[in-house]
Amino acid sequence: MSENQPATAAAGSSPEENGLPPTNRDVSPVPDRGRRTPRFQLGGLGHSLGLIIALVLLIIIGVITSGERFVGLSNIMVILEQTAVIGVISIGVTFVITAGGIDLSVGSVMGLATVWASTLATQTMAQDTHWVIMVFTALAVGAGAGLINGAIVAYGRVVPFIATLAMLVAARGLAEIISNRRTQIVNVEGYLDFFRADVLGVPVIVWMFVLVAVAGWVLLARTTFGRRTIAVGGNPEAARLAGIKVQRHTMWVFTLAGLTAGLGALMMLARTTAGSSTHGYLYELDAIAAVVVGGTLLIGGRGTIVGTVLGVLVFAVLTNIFIQNNLSISAQALAKGAIIVLAVLLQQRFAARARSS
Image 1: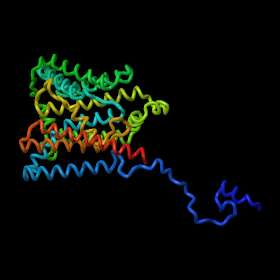
Image 2: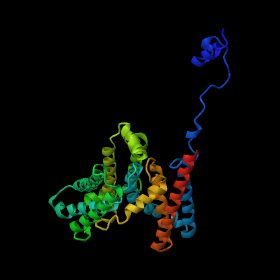
Image 3: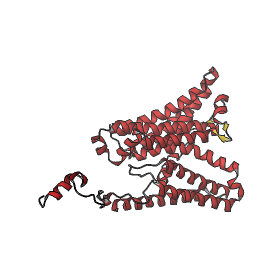
Image 4: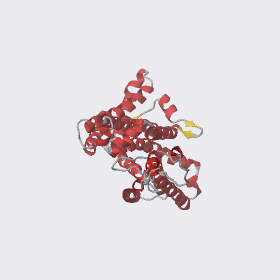
C-alpha cells in the first residue's frame, strides 16, 4: 500500500469500508461558530421570560398599592376585557411589523368600523335585518381599509408610514361624516346577547382574544404564510429571489391587520353599546408599543405573538394600577413612554449581540 493511499481512502469513505480499523475520533463537522444563536435571542424564551417577570412584579406592586382587591376576580375580568380589544388589534399589527411595515391607521379604521356597523344597526335593523350583517359589515370595512393600505404600499410603492398615516386621517374623517360626529347607540338584542355573554364565567370578548392569539401564533409560527412574512421582513429582495410574491404578500399582511381592526370594532361595540368616530383614538400607538415591548423587531424579520400578548398584558396591568391609585393620565403616559424606550434599547442590545456572535 502506498504512503498516500490511507489518506485518499479516508477522504472518500469511512475507515471500515476501506479495510482500516475503526477509530474513536469524533469526525463530526465543526459547528459554524459565526452563526451561533445567542443564549437569550430577541423574541425567544429569554425575552418572554423577562416579560413574565415584569408582569409578576407589576402584579405584586398592584397588590401592595391597592390591596387584595387588585387580584380579585372582578378586577381581573376588568383587566382582561380592557386587554381584549387592543390585544386583537395588536395581533394584526405584529404581522405588519414582522413583514417590515408599520400601520398607523388601525385605531381610526376600528372607529370607522364601529360607526358603519352602528349606522347599519340604527337605520336598517328596524327592517328585521339580522345582526350578523353588522358583523360582516365591520369585518368588511376593516379588511377593505387594510386592503387599500396594502395595495398602496405594495403596488403604489408608497412608504407604509405615509400610506397608513393618510388612512388614519381619511378613516377618522369618514367616520365623522357618516355619524355626523354623534354617538350612535346600539341596542340590537341578539348582537348584545351574543357578544356580552359569559362562557365559563369569562366574557366572550376575552375568549375571542384568546382564539385570535392562538390563531395568530399558529399562522406566524407554523404556516407558510408566517414563514413568508418573516422572510419578507428580513430581506424582501432575497424573498423575491426565493419565489415569494413580495408585493402580493405585503398586501395580504395589511389586509389581515385591517381585519383584526374590524374584529376589534365588534368587541368595542359590545363593550360600549355605541359606535363613535372617537373610538380607537391612539390605539395604533398602544398596539405598536405592545408589539415592540413584546419583542417584535421594528425593522422586521422577527415577530412573536406570545411576546405581543405579554406586552399587552403588561400595559393593561400598569394602567389598572394607575387607575386604582387615582394617578393622572399624564403619569400613565410617562410610564408607558419609559417602558417603550427601555424595550427599544433592549432590542438594539440583543440585535448587536446577535450580530457580534
